[in-house]
Image (cartoon, rainbow, N blue to C red; front, side):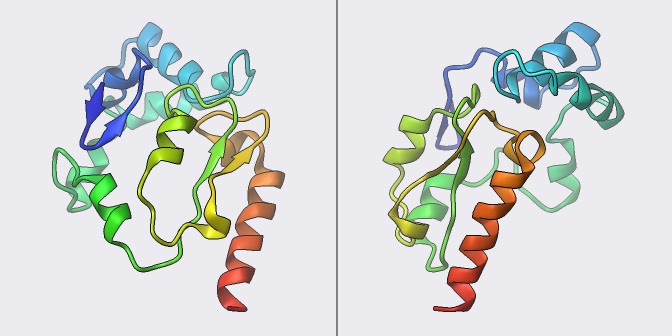
Length: 143
């Protein structure tokens, strides 16, 4: 599947942008956002229910265009330092795809993997995520 330059093989990806409050679909979305067999998917369910369908609905009110601008083009052109922190067990974002992106100012010249986490790495593994983010910010401030 291709979505504004974004590639994923996960079949649930399209549901993340759909108007749905179906309990089975919300459960499938929550399970796709975390590492496989993670108990934290149940923690996401109340937030997904509260979102009222269509995880990305808020983008319209935030001034984002639909479909969103081409993220690959944004990465290609940006002049600011960029850190990409990705869960090692992410189901919706392929690491090989992320590694193929033409990022000019990628921090430490690579994608940083958060062990035992999926797409919601800051939620699932907040300590290693925060440590990497702190390192990135420190490098930026001290460069």
